[in-house]
Length: 140
Image (cartoon, rainbow, N blue to C red; front, top):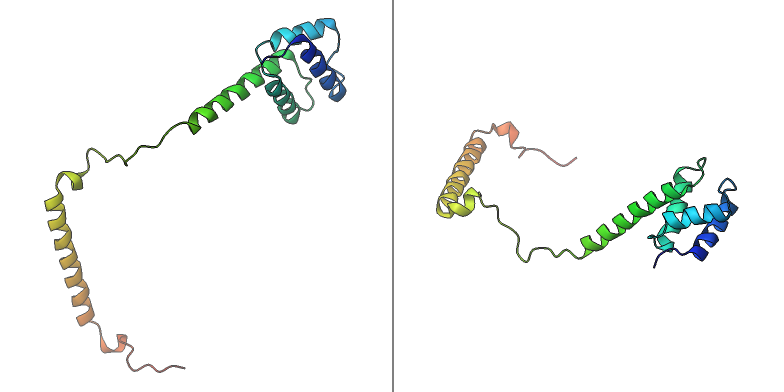
């Protein structure tokens, strides 16, 4: 549904009550009707509200409201399309993943690294000085 001439006059009356700088006459009604001919009335109203929220000192004009309404419609359409996108059924594996291309070598190197790390930690534990063990400490 688009804004028709009667709705344009009603909207201009509403805008004029908020901002008397916006003229309410036959010429203005025709200009606004032409500019908003392909705009949904709810989107047009939202565009006017957003215009005055952002630009309180600037009178609404047919061109500015038409552009803002087009941006609102584009945003709404994008949001609806985004809601229709389905996530992939299975996670996409990286095609260059070294682990997936060499699983046996990956497992071998992982275990080797684990053994090396455990050996280093064990060696550090054996070389710990007796005063570092805290065995002689008592609770305060």
